[in-house]
Image 1 (cartoon, helix red, strand yellow):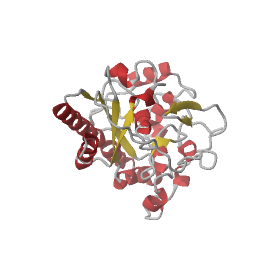
Image 2 (tube, rainbow, N blue to C red):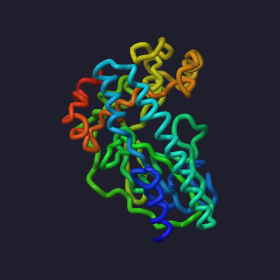
Image 3 (cartoon, one colour):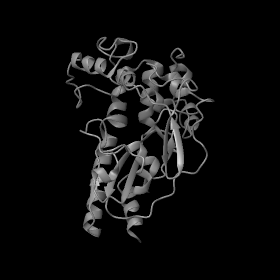
Image 4 (cartoon, one colour):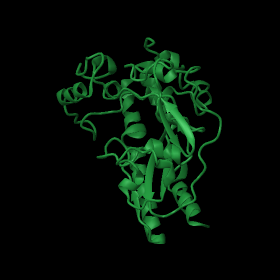
Length: 303
């Protein structure tokens, strides 16, 4: 068995649901400082592992959004967002990096995963697409054919040269003009209405991808529940078009939380991930009775 097959077998044996490899040439358009070779000089391969989120964890969001069970958001925070998937990815990336260094003599560097880590080394989203694990959806989230966006990814950079996997070449997974659910369920308008603005463009591995640029302050407003109507303890960010300065000022006004491992919890939303129809959503949730459908979570359509 060659070393690439060994690495993939190790990833799956450690609980991962997918593993892909990208060549360094697919990162030619990375911003300065975010190219894998800026992080690990001499990097030749980018290994990406992915773990799907449990259907039972996603259903906790349905109960919160559709039945008002905000007490269940902690299930999503623990098992779907901040903690367990990212701890699992952290350990697996570390094990794979150790395996490479022990068995090949090459250098391997696991990257940070999850919202509790400090710093961003490379774009995990772009790495997952470059490794052939999926494609970008309209909301810029990575969509996988089997699980839609309900996947978390981890990245290992290495000077070991591996045969890259082919880019995803299956059916187009997202058609925002026909769907647009991510925009419709977004409670703050962070995801703009399809067809109303110019899309971001990125080229990797000879393929072109287009997606919307999500409004970061508006997205964080929902993720961190920065108003009472979003499930927060107070109205900390009330500007209709908040800037980054508004966001930072609001974060300073928010009380430090003592009920979890994050100072300010960032798992209060996830609607775009939860209600995206890609990944056999209907069979997993609608037809099983776990969700009444995205229409029950719609807010007034943003103009």
